[in-house]
Image 1: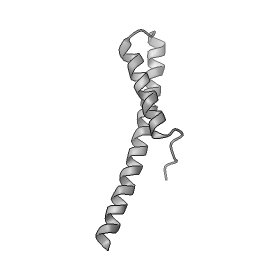
Image 2: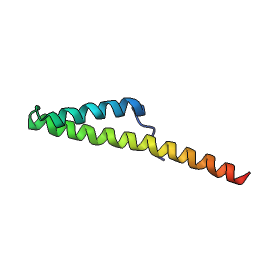
Image 3: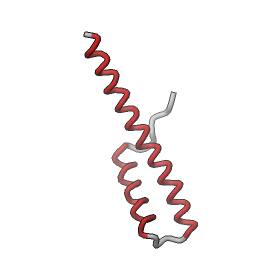
Image 4: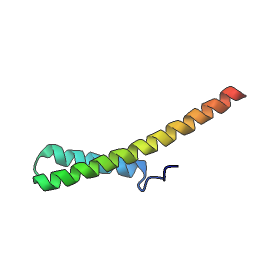
Length: 68
């Protein structure tokens, strides 16, 4: 069973947008770019976990509706 993400979806998404903006600007040194990339990967995984959880809830609710 997967644990709940440490950040809420909106917070993770907002931070991910900031990471992408900084990487696209190209104004950070390579070592910082690598750290930002790694953080972006973690944030993207958190967002995906939230989205997967929401989809599972929707699928479950649809299943209950069809079962009635």
